[in-house]
Image 1 (cartoon, rainbow, N blue to C red):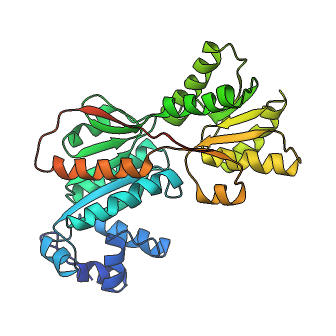
Image 2 (cartoon, one colour):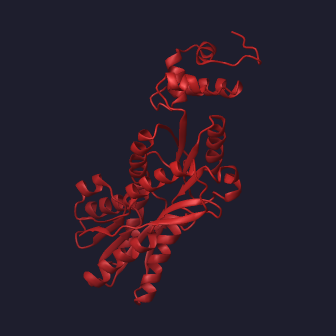
Image 3 (spheres, rainbow, N blue to C red):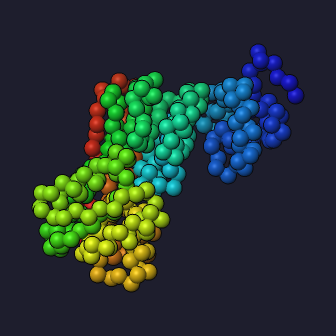
Length: 322
């Protein structure tokens, strides 16, 4: 089939060019994760080649609203980010807004790629889970249509959690309530500004203030790295290990279990139901991820009609399961 450049393509045209059904094209447009990856890539290439944009009427006929928001997560399997997104979605649905969920994998080129696509789709706003490497210049066209989560940038509205307070409260629990003097830290490399640098600095500051000897192991944010870092963390014979994230705590607890070490208490930042189920002795400080999601959803909806001044909003939580 040949298509004239002057003709405005329909979903039927895209389907015929790709040799698939119209419903498959619709599923790709709506980011259905169950579509075969080869099929998705083939359809996406045709969409990009002909710069196809679904019409407003077509979207309405498929049961969609005339408004849509992009949500760019860092990882689709992030428990924290999923908590935030799950609290956004009901608010978006109630306001007739279609979400388009994407994943950056902590890659700036992926963010740029997704923003280009979202611009073609003419979305009304974007939620971006920001990370180190993202700068204001690459987001310049989205200043009045975007809210950042986890990291603030000059000129943008951002919503962040109180990382420093979380670390200090856990340190107070170990040091002042439990009377521990030897508290190791397992964290993220400081190249990560939020879960890495901020949380590590807060740990160091507490140790300095109360004349404790800091013992830190830093690496990537994964269960596997938590497991590997645990070996170094226990070498100083700590009474407790503070983990920057729940994924690291998983790895640490697995290492302690396999080594039959039962006299080291573990705490972490970030709620994870599976961690609580498998290792209920883990002390968990819950950051307000759900509260963050609700705040962001309402702010972005408001931003559609009201110009908002750049600002950084801190969501704090004092919930510690002891």
